[in-house]
Every structure is written in C-alpha cells, then in structure tokens.
Length: 153
Image (cartoon, helix red, strand yellow):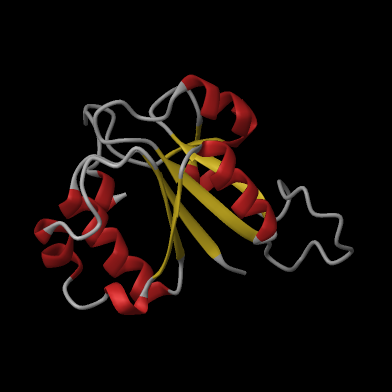
C-alpha cells in the first residue's frame, strides 16, 4: 500500500515544507495541485522541509484533472477528501471496503489518496463532488475547535 497526499492549491510554504518532511519520512507520495501560493524554491518551504526535499517523491500537477489521472496511473483505488463539511470521521472509514479495486484479495490494503484543500478555502465544491460524498472524511478533533493546521493534519 502506498499513501498519496494531495494538496490542492496550498498557500503557505511552511505547511507544504512540513508535509514534504512527513512524506520523506513515511514513504508517502506528495502531489501538489496548482495554483500554488509560493514558488517551489521558496526559502520558507526549504526551511520547513529541512534537507528532506531530496528524499520526498513529489509531483506537481496543473489542475485537479491531471492530479486525478496521476492517481489513477499510480493505482490509487481509494481517493478521499479531508473536509470540514458534513462527513464521517476518519477513524470510521474502512479503506479496504471502500476500494474500487476489483482485486480478489480485499484483505490487502489498496493504494489510497488523502486530498486536502487550501488553508484558506478548503476543497472546491467540484473536487469534493468528483471524489463523492461517501469519501469525505473529517479528522477527529474537539467539537469546539475551529480547524487543524494543514501540516498537522
């Protein structure tokens, strides 16, 4: 199983740098979907990612359609949207059961994609609709909390 982390229109280079570090240390694949709120050589991005950039597998896509095609090519059978919209808790989601894979061995975990929107606007409605409401997940947090920082999610 490979985890793909998809950031759609991220705005803050420090958040993306922290996620680059996470991906380098966990083996997750990182996908950035334009527009980006920074340049890939931004000092804040580099500082937050320390020297992990060379160890992270990073792809940059011009739009959601290109990212979706890359996920399909990477054999991602589960694509989920992490959202604050009405959704089921992340820990209640059965990634194996919700796979679109036709593989006979459903016990094997499929490649999955966790899709996050920008820090300021979240995921656009059309992307959430493309992913499908059954695959909208909410990260667990206290009820009176506003939100988690993208790089902590």
